[in-house]
Length: 352
Image (cartoon, rainbow, N blue to C red):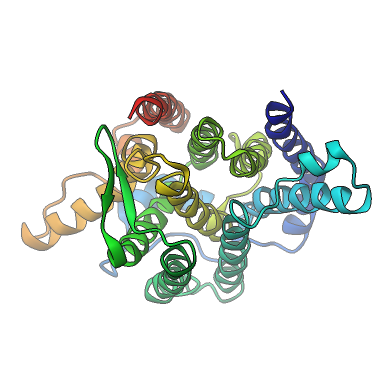
């Protein structure tokens, strides 16, 4: 019973903290005009994204970026306060409720903070210089280096050398766990492009984090489950203010923090927890995979098919908008798919 309470309290607390701090954050963002100074977007090929700009050009300005601060700050405040209470007032209950542990939450807390700070720098460059922030190569390099550091910790310190395969068991891959983690993290980071319609990213990410909280809890990784729901609570607070019309955008400080942390949680719930956390992401994280995959397919098609496109616009949620789906319909259908994928992933994780 106490384990259940230990997991539920961070979710409620993080949501409450997020709701409490958002008015001050919103006031700061609007007062300092923390938004892009020039509307429009340039595609990966260096050309203007005409379809996207036609749909969202007017929304690119006058709506602040950096809304992801609400998410990671809420989670970090809850983690820190519960940890401090357990140290200042050490009782059986307060000690039990503390979920800051070396073997389960140190690494995801680290990646949440690092991703948030790097993303924050990128957002500030975007806002102040209007040059698109850090280049894609620089961001990918940073993500790759952080992933390499964490992967090395997994391999050399935690001695992770296997990957869980559904209905099979652990597959030994040895040192290949390092490049696998790096590639997995970079691929997951690319899913951050889902932050493109009001409420879309917040709903999908909260569903995924809650699903992994369920997986961690089932595997008796209670601290990791508590941390996951703390992030989900911050996401729900963010979503409260990001539902159309959005008060702010998640932007890089949110998406980088969330994707880096989610990659760690997926691996923490794999062989370390006696589960299949990485493999099951193909199901739980399908909305992110489909979103980033649509961008890759579009670029390949344009390169090898003489400039021909598969989708009207990418990521794919903008394709649906171009088909005259209202943004709220795209978002809510994404949410429905996300919930179904999460439930299916939980089933596979439990029986696989």
